[in-house]
Length: 155
Ligand SMILES: [Zn+2]
Image (cartoon, rainbow, N blue to C red; front, top):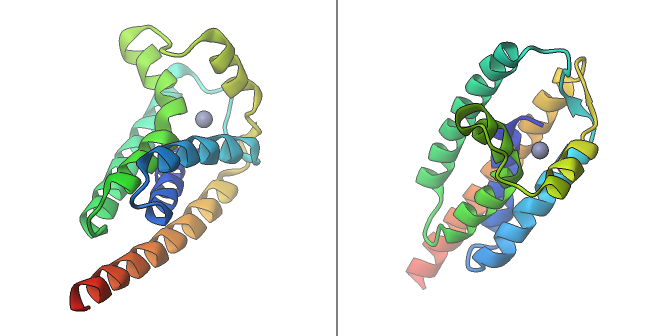
């Protein structure tokens, strides 16, 4: 699954748990596993260069989404930060291997993460649809949180 979609899912989890970062982090990790289990886009025949060209664009889009979410989230933001951190944690193996030559996770965890993947190259529409639904849900969550924050200031 694209990291941008994991960022959106983690933000959504964090928006639901604004004052409980531990639960938001755990929920973010769970969201990652569930999303990797669902059919999504991936191509094992890509070269390392081709993979990182896509990953670079996805990573930059994910950072942009994170910046927008953080700017739009009313305080407290720790739930959203924790949710996103949990949601992207398992995918840190790829940049760590690329830039530092090491997998930061125990072998059993990396094997599990690889084993749960349900990837196929023709599933780009699945990724876009999932990202669109998550973006709409996160926007709804942001609107709701902002409304509740304004209401709390008035009362
Ligand atoms: Zn993953």
